[in-house]
Length: 189
Image (cartoon, rainbow, N blue to C red):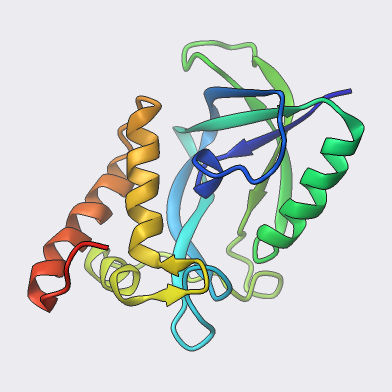
């Protein structure tokens, strides 16, 4: 039986595992938000970066990509890899995946997705909502072993545009970070 994994952040442009198919689509009832702290990839424990998580939201959709992994060995390798990569996300959900926002029947049911919940008892890296300017400033200055947090934001913006998704939250944040850049004198990264 095939395993499906939904990516809504860096998994869109960097899977890191073997897969048989990559399908653009969405999940319903969630929105993408920069509320998850990153102390292992795009920030440090002293200065966490911000990455995306999903927040339940009636009537909203979150676009991304679903990866189909058919071979048992590839599934095991992918799961081992993802458990390390996504270790700061405390929930794994199995959701319906759609390729058409108007569809009532999912293209695939049971697509696995990692979520950073707002429950601080189980997710100590959850940062939660903040004013756009504050989130942008944190993203601008944070840097971790995987590079500057702003690169993550700009890669996400580009990857979403490439799949035909204009995510207002991501675009507004990216534009705010671009606005901050001239104030600092730092060049593009």
